[in-house]
Length: 224
Image (cartoon, rainbow, N blue to C red; front, side, top):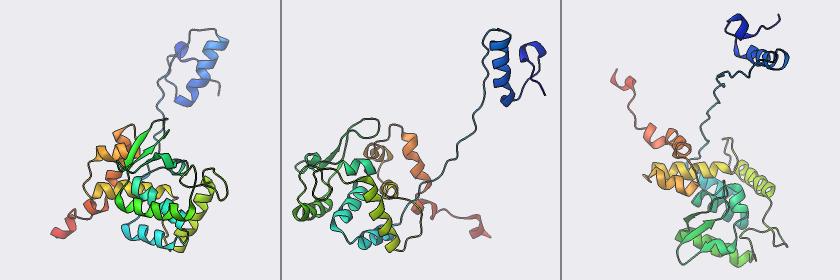
């Protein structure tokens, strides 16, 4: 069925027809440009996958390589993104101030995260054995950052060896870091800064997966 211009018929068109109508009015009939307020469909909002503390421990135990176990522990301890941990340099470790500087994160913004005593001990053990020169985690025999695909492959193997059925890549350790901090009572604005989120709304999605809070809510069934 041919489309008629809304300005000549006075008929309100469904949004799929409006683009055709606008083209006909502007290009064929040489009318003034018209603007239509078209509502976009809502995007699906999925909750992030989160490990329990026991599952995190199982992944670390299943990772036989000291190099990758240290890398996984660093991600869980600080909430770094995959690309951020892969390009972390030795000079980014500030031992005197107990900080790690994340340079050029998402949005090209630098930020700092904590270097705890336990994490420092783990990193020191790794550095003594592997002696990297520039990046904390380097390709074997080269002073280049470890490949992201290699990290993902080793991580997938460790999760499988740990017998964990939950779907998700190494980014799930970052989700677990944020959720476990929130469950322990850490202010959400500190978590926002640690994760490098520009908007607090992005961080607030973790409030929907804090299991300890949800599990304490009384159900109406209990009063029956």
